[in-house]
Image 1: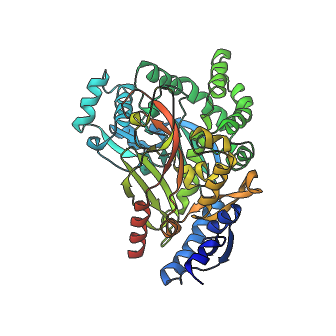
Image 2: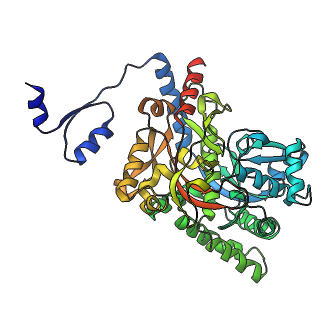
Image 3: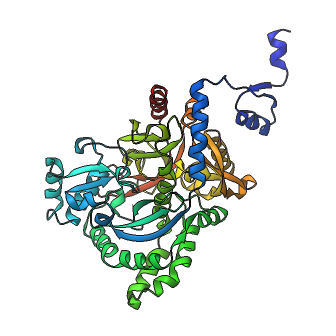
Length: 456
């Protein structure tokens, strides 16, 4: 048959390997034959399969509860022992830090009373008199800049299946906030209120009435949340769970009303709870020899880093990418900082961009399209995940579970970069959030991790 004759007929496709390509073609009316094929497995793969099965067992057996709020120095004694400040993402020195991270650090230094003003704070930070370390090194996570200091109140999530705990700061609300690099008097006053009034009240309520998080997440997914850029349902469910215990905690009526208003008026309040939960679920999988399951993804505004179970505490980094999304009026991509924050722990545990199909409204908010695009994103993420979560169901996918357990091998084999729903910070300190979008985890991080696993 001549080439002209072949080209004159309808397109017919033989797809070898990933079924997702065949599904997309068929959905667009193309005749396609699917051939199941995978490369032969090496002994390394066989050992990795067994290790990944154990990692998944631990992840899916998790029983996370929100149990307390405590001062950071009580939970991380190193914060009380020296001038130590924790930040989002993998490690980096002051000289390589981006604008919003530097701005948040300066504000935190003033908040802790180490100096009197922001100029002096910048000099102190640059002098080497303050130590910096990732939240992840101390059992914590933090959104965007992720700043954690000794006097800040931290949410405590306990994974009772493995007796480990993880921590996260309380979400500050919307507008100009420290997580987006804010550092003025308004920002510091809000942090002081969280420290002195709201945190102790919430902690007392949680000690009396801990909140099981797996069923709450399941309900949130059914109500349109994906737990990264949309937390409206879970925030409301959490408030309903805690209102009685908070009312019984003995706070003055005005203080109680202010606390209720703060939670109810902050649609992203649950974000920080979900982040601590994600870390508590993934941490028990660290250190499983040969496992290629991702246990952390994080960004510091300069570098993107991942950890995989088989390499324990080691970071694998690459330059962080710019998010693609929508900007608030008056701002554009020229104002944006590269992606930042520990909140990618949510995608690592199967939420956020991995559960985009549960929250199609988010796809429009972050500039990722409509309902079909949201469903396609979750289906694509399933190609790089090792399992579906048995409790976290997505209605739009016929109640299939959320994709969970990112397998670094699948990322490299398919070239599919994990999608991360994210806020966008201004590149200069003090301005705050300028938009929202979707970012991608760099492939180089996963390639480096696999090389390290191959040497182990």
